Length: 281
Image (cartoon, rainbow, N blue to C red; front, side, top):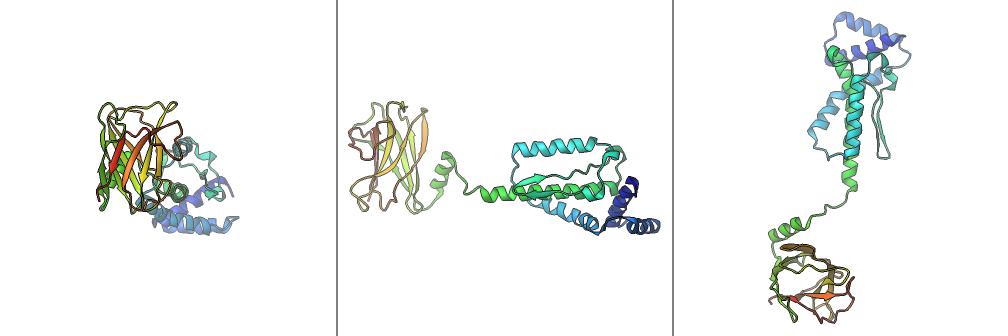
């Protein structure tokens, strides 16, 4: 069979799917099918599923594709649109696959836009549908592998403020207060063991010289305070710092900020304790 015969089968199958074949065209399709060296029923099923596949992809919100993958798909689409009809592959080469997280687009090119018929278009759409389904599967797998969503400090702060049963404790001067007053608060969700510190006017530190460290005082757990994380203040104004408790907090009595050597300490002498947030009983 000639390349023209293969293309004719492709378009007639598409017309069959669309339901607009004439009697003569049905006769022609039957004749060509008998002459085909391969079974065209698989291709017929591809075309029948194309519309459904496209509908599913269009109706299902997908994750944003990585920029590199999106650019690759766009470039291939532009190249395909420019490809002459004489360079199209035969029916048997119209496949696309997803394996080991890799998308391999179909190589079938659509007809030139100036001469595109509905039948030719739907034949190409079948290949495009396979690509879109592959992309959908890729996005879905990326979502599943992404793990839990990480909130920004601002998002976490706003989220904590909306929760019920969350403690909000204002900062007050410690045993060695800053020269200028610092305001803000601790927001702590003991049930979920999540919290954040808000500071306004906190002095910017040089992390090569000293760092801030949070301590969570919890007598019900231990006499020694819990390390709540070492942190830096790199900007003036309002600063939000997530709490990184190294142990489970049972019943916090107070939150304290000390100034320590770079990297923090395991046990603090609390010689420099500028801020304290006592929890009211």
